[in-house]
Length: 522
Image (cartoon, rainbow, N blue to C red; front, side):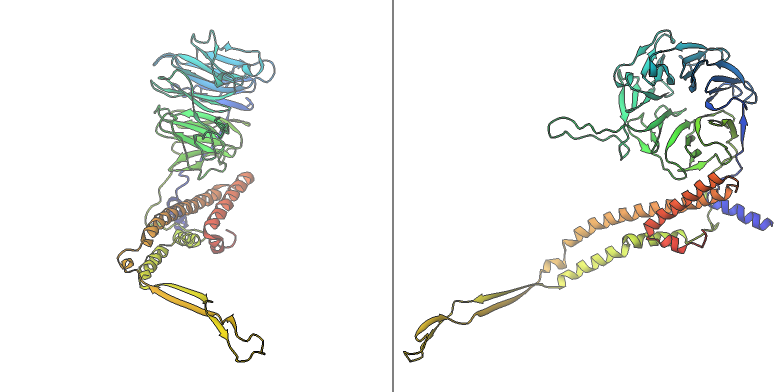
């Protein structure tokens, strides 16, 4: 029994070590209802603020007990966003809560609240997010972006597009000078300390980056920009240059304050669309999707929500003790993350069993199916070298009709006697053989083969990289599927569908070789 347990442990470690300890989610704040936002104080990890559809809740014992801090009267008054911020380095932190009832501020860590922004004109009254930047409060609403330079006593509407369209998210990068990011219905904008106006830095084209549009034939610029379905923007806690975007096409990262963006790998995500991002010091990145919560580490995503009895995650927060808080449609949940999740590296010399062919077999099948074998280029070079030994052959055939015949029969009574007529066709032909002896030294076909060789190597590397990632991603998903209990039917179904999707992707690269080699039932 001990040997079998040790073998299973080595198998999990060699294949990626998904979990060193099981993550256990516990519901906290029972009775508060659907949680829309949650925030943990950076100075005091025992202070937790939660926002729901009608109320702000406050806990001083890390979520064990909650008390009402602010009751929102009237219709739908849900809380959309919670934010801790200060106007100066080392200054007193102020807590902000934005929602359908406006923007509220607390200067005593959530004990008492006062409303500092309220607008009665429809969408402008519903606040979506808030951030402090360069001594000003910036407030995003459904009807535009507002800012205040006097601690919220008076407000001004931002000029330009941001002042007129819905603002979905705001984030201010740490450090001075930093960058303020704003997500609107037409893309992502940035305001830097050296700039006087906002600059649009991201529009999600099919390629995932901004592309210059050529001038139309009539001289006007084509207006084909399609705004990204960006749902959240987040700045790294320890690096003002790094920012992240949660979009319906995955998570994007910028390491140069939004000047360029790169989409992170999607391996491990059950759904590429991300709703919320939590970026911390040290490069830790946690994202929520429509299928759960995922940790990005080691170039792939690991699911953290196996035991979480909720699907829609609205907000994430983490304290300095490594506890992750999730605001969901079923309430507020907490799990210990640090120390429970580790990503082990495959150890050399340990065999990782699979349910089908090995990685080398799959790679060879992909190379053969794509016809990018190295032997192909070798044969081309050998055939090009033999070309000089073969002659260039040319042949021609012609008709010679210039001969005229004179018939003289010696009689004056026969027809056609003494008449000049055309004779039979004369057929001319020739065959020419020629050799270009210079081909023995250098053949122009070699230059073309060199170009094709470089392109083939690039294509082969891309195919091998893709099939290798898919192969080991499938192994990890299968291990994760084994961790899901039978009672969690929805989670198992999602994992099984993801497993089939990866199998189909490998089959597409190998011409069905992978499925043919799989054991029955796998």
